[in-house]
Image (cartoon, rainbow, N blue to C red; front, side):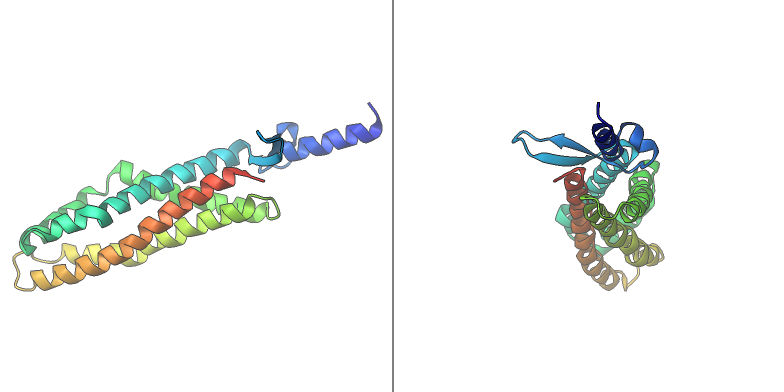
Length: 201
């Protein structure tokens, strides 16, 4: 093997994984697609994180979609006293290990992926990783913490049988659901972008 060939092989190894991952843990692998074209795929620990981000974002999109599609409509068909009491109960029981793992675990994953995207800026997948992380962190985590949680806490203080319950519920349902649509779309978009990032040319 010539010195030039050895140098090229070492360069490819650095870019495509193998021992090169010890030097650059966020490397992408070059593979040949079905049509003979060269494509780059995320490898190693970053691949695991991106897949986790896509799955977590998809889970959250499904949860938010359920509320936007039928849960809030079903609650609104109840008398205000029942709707308020039911939503108060939902907000309490929703804080389960499974739900919080999906919400906060995906948040943590997105933070790491965002850092990786900045560290590997220039790679074909970096922009997708940055976009997917930003969609989830901004459209799901930040929106939930800044908008939905305070309103859930305020609803928890409402007496379902009070004279103001009907008006408070109507306002809560309208505004809460409107921004829940945004969360659902953001989470679904993040899942889609992460999926695309796994294989980009």
